[in-house]
Length: 397
Image (cartoon, rainbow, N blue to C red; front, side, top):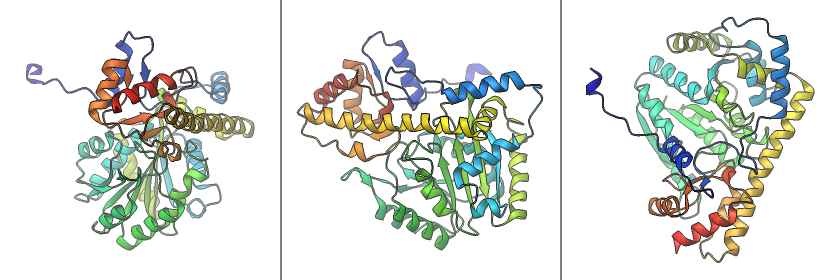
């Protein structure tokens, strides 16, 4: 039977990473895969994580299964970090959380839940969006549509076309939004624009689904949650897929969560029962180590303070690299304006480079960028920024 199986094409981003690893050029630059890197090009283990893991190792007494929905203390910490401990959503007990294997796992659980309970509802994705979004929700059997997001003329948010298109959505449709640090553009709505989106969601009776993978990587933990908290109005339902891959550096631990906000406590319990049903038929229950690490850090005042400092350092490095890149590329005599990159948030930016230019950078200079022109800003350093600017100058003429 397996002789009939066709070879699947490699993942567009992970395939690039493999090509980078096989490239013998000592001056190669990887700006493709979305992981944070320090100035030495290393994805570090945070000190607060090391300390938490030490405590867990010393105190661990069992390797027994977790509940289907994961660690209760972790789930509580997830909600409080997103909303704040005194938010109405938490006080009213109308939010429930399930631990998931990464943000991707949370998205798939959300997709299966939506397909089971609201069949035929259309899910709206930004154009562009993370390339894995359509894969995940198509696999779950959910109809997809798109709304404009990126304005190529201004390198900003196409807000009016976005709102005009979403005004045509049907009652009960699902609206996927990036909570902050939009992947791949790095462009986020302003607080006023978030308010307008919240008004539209209520007027059209849409269900917001937030992909919230970068809290703390834009402007700060509270600042990056402005959109989420704007949408979490009294009585408003929503789904939130969150991750600690980036802000804790726990990429290979796959630490995520899906939070459902219902109109009230009884409705939230019913949703939780359906989420647990989905999980049981998928991976049954989640792993403990990464979630226990996060729970330990967020539950200890000293460790949490240490984490916030390390997170601020990562955020400041990314914002500093944005400025350095803009300054360097301006100084090397390129006519094209790249100042928009300094205004964007998080690890990603749309560089404006096209597929031909991206291919030329890879083939001639071993500079690896996704075909859309998206770059991982965290892959830029003081050591490689001059070579990167030289390459861009060469390919744009």
